[in-house]
Image 1 (cartoon, one colour):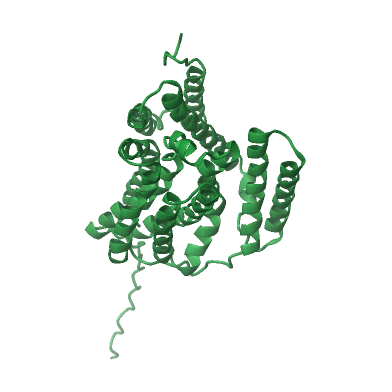
Image 2: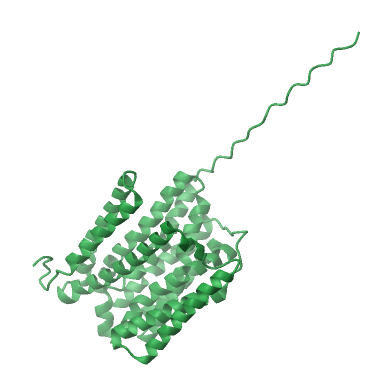
Length: 375
């Protein structure tokens, strides 16, 4: 009689579900509050000088071209170096780059407040270089701190709203400073904010480096920046002094450098900008709308600030307070787009927004010295 062998039971199939994303806690939300500080400053410094233009003109007596560079060189440096600084942050650490940029921003703010004419342009350019380190670092750190999709969506919305709101609110403290102090005071607004970031950033913010970060192509970074500045120089000189040989030559060189930049990106295995994205209609269309919209809004904001002071004779503080209605309308539009977004296609929603903006710009053309929109 032989012992009965037990039947081998089939081993159960083990199914493992992907781990749940970690839920952010108090430290991460406090870190988000810290990350909104540099975002506020980056956007605010693009508009805070609009109200100070009459005071700067009276005090420093710059030429028309110098005045344009004083106001705009900051934004051009930020835009021209955003991609480059994002790559640098992936390589050396996003928190480290953020803190380096914060220290440089505070120092450049002091230098700009005490500068005179051409040195003010240089200081504003340095502010733009420092500002370019802040925006990509903050957004990248948000992705690191908030792995839960819902929390990340909320945190990103807070980031975007901070960026938009600060551009509109900036003229209000700027108007207070201009009313009670001198124009350099508006440039010192960022110093205490950056000092707070330097103090609490190392405690609340994590460090992150991208292990798959590619080589930083400094040649591509230089080509892109030189191309943009060359074309901008042409436009500003023609607007201020008329058409002449020197600015045309510089602008032509900028266009050639832009062509070299594009050809270089196509050859590199790890390009600074992946130009293949431009072949996607959705991406290319959104980029075009954002670019044109940013240029138009910046120009209309600058014009409105000068109109309120130089034509209607409002004080800097009163002119700053007049920026609150556009801010309220912007916040309402963001809230409405979130609720309407489920019912309207993105194309239709974008077209509706552009139509409303066009109507507002048309109303601006009907203003007069009495301030009546429709005489």
